Length: 379
Image (cartoon, rainbow, N blue to C red; front, side, top):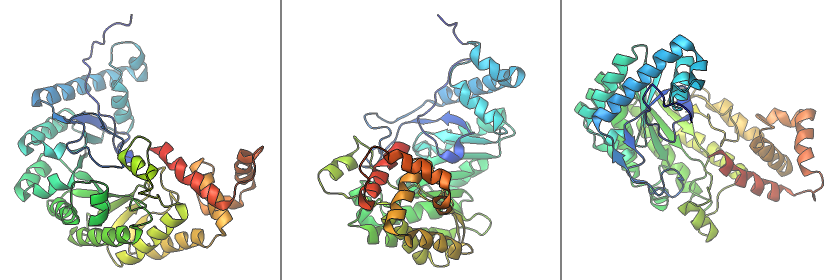
């Protein structure tokens, strides 16, 4: 039997944004206060609960103690039985420069602002090198927060909010049971940026399905434009793309099985993104494509400066023969292709073709359907 760790254990939630991979993870609230979004597989079957302040502060102290051991002894300290297994994330935080902290789980802003400010202050006290403290937030929660409440959190050291936009179309928000309206999203985003916080919207191309694709694009562009206009030049809105996928076991998967939802393929999603860039016009924001769900990881930049370049990238894909589009989509989902030019790489294309040896050659529609199904692997 392994010896009990000499450093106390501490809670860690199940997820964090990719951009927070090297962040210290501090669990303030368990699970999701809403937990009804039809596309989301996380937290299903669980209940949300707020953790007592003393428990969260004790976790921060345990993390500080684990960090002290890791600084003194290095990675080898993880294998000696003195540290709990979750200290691995503390090691990632140290390797990342001890700069970033992420508050978990899905909606820490639902916690009383004074309590959340106390957590942030303790984190800042125990880890003085930290220069970024971020959290997830629900639109309906953030829309209710007053300027004074958000100001309190900013003064305590909160710097950024990650907010699931998903879609700006009310009909899509209703269909996915998001629990908010486009008006809530605009109010939430405006509240955040006017309070001096950075804001990251997460947009899900394809989430409207084929039936509501046009509404999905138009509504999303409207919300993004409104919030981007409210954001100051020195702290522009950030929009991160998360291409929609249907995960088995979710309510969206049940709708798909019943024929009530058809997930757009990668060609259709590329057209959605092109339409979105057109509808955003001269909106000022930062676009990011930092997730394996996205077909084109290079589709990012500063808008409107980079809009023509990004439109050209999408046009390059949309202009390909359908067979090439389909092969690129499958190759990208298998990790063989990263950009359209990889189609001209004989080594990469040979590796893709090797996947079909012994099988009847699939047509373009079959390949696109396979690539669409493969998205669920990246959730």
